[in-house]
Length: 320
Length: 294
Image (cartoon, each protein chain N blue to C red):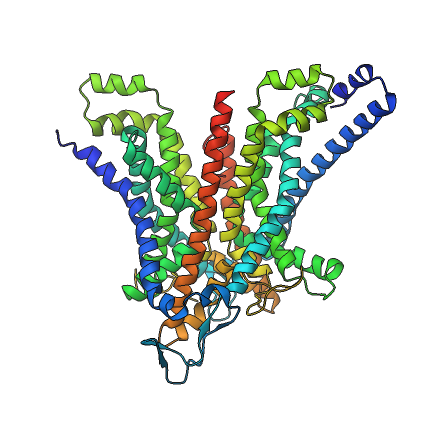
């Protein structure tokens, strides 16, 4: 076989992507090894995260040096992550379905009806579609800033019985806004690809336009919609800054209402930087590494599910 | 919408049923329209609030003074974000474009699809996980401390998969006849890619680089555990010197009690938002429905 230096070079460059991924997983696993031994399964089932006494002499448990009284349980953060993400999905799905249907079907009609009177206007649909997509590119931290400046006072004054806007609901609303464009643009693309014949036959049967959309088109894109929702869930689970800024940073207690302060796994990792640095035994850094590993595994599972679902949906579309 | 609704009465024998269907349809359209408004309104509100407060806070001190000392400006954060982004791009662009070239030109095989799959996994990995990985490897393991090198490498890991994917998509647009012509003229692999395929796809590759730039300017989570924070400008060292960055200013200054800190937070948010939105709008206006990230 001939040696091809150029192909070899670009192959090596592209192999750096898998290498980085493998390194991430490997180092997280290796570094959290001691924490896994120390925590056991309590890590996933305990609510209390206690760094222990960082100033006293460390004690030795199972042959591992840990601060006295340390225990690491992340159940509260797992629950906070799942609760905020699922709530966000519940808010985002109707919004994005409405958005996608309106963009795909109603906006062209509006354009046809009114735009010929105003030929100088820019086309409406690309502009609206771009606005929806732009929601997805606003940096997370700017969403958080808006949450603090606008959303939190609103929830605190008008909705929350406790008068504090920080908590599960605020986190879910911000997350919902951030993931809506993902679901909406996936669904919008799918709706635009529904064959003309299916729409026309539904019209010919005497359906109203809305019935054509809900009864003839939506069933055809259901698989794509579900794929998009799962993809959005993956994004919501790993979202950090916006959640950190509006969630109230609750810890060591399971959320009991929409207004409970919570932490998600991702926001908790950020919040723990200072205390982790103060631990002389480095145990909390190792435990946090285990936390990051759990977050990685959860998002990996969700993204894999999204991939399977959307590839299946693609096959259906090609067959038509 | 209404044009089609008028067809239904003739079909339906019971006029109340027809009426109900018309009303349900109208209500359905209204609900969908409200959905769209509920998505677009927060975006406009975010842009409005940040622009209003950000512009109100603007003065020259922001660009000439550091957050340290009297705390009047954010020159160190602007400089830091610029430096982190530049070095992240310097690391990421060759790797990302090279990987894209491999995937597009020679990646129609098992290796290619494996790399593509793992690249998607890396894209889906939460950025805080990447940040924590860098923390335990570079900050603790290598002993670099919070530093520019750790921050730039982390951001590079984050954006390489995007660059690779967009480069691949761009190169796929180049017709095969061009490659065949170049090979027929005796071009070697490197010549064909470098002189024919890449130039033909250059706008797509530049688009990818710009989008990656927008991502790196707007990221926060992976930098917290790698860049640290400094109240002063970058001192030229790659390791053992924390760097400031704009998104940190937004995150922490909004929690300070004084009005000047809030003003600086909004000014930083305005800068970051303008860069990110300008790049994304520009890219979308020039390439219609091109490479999509979402």
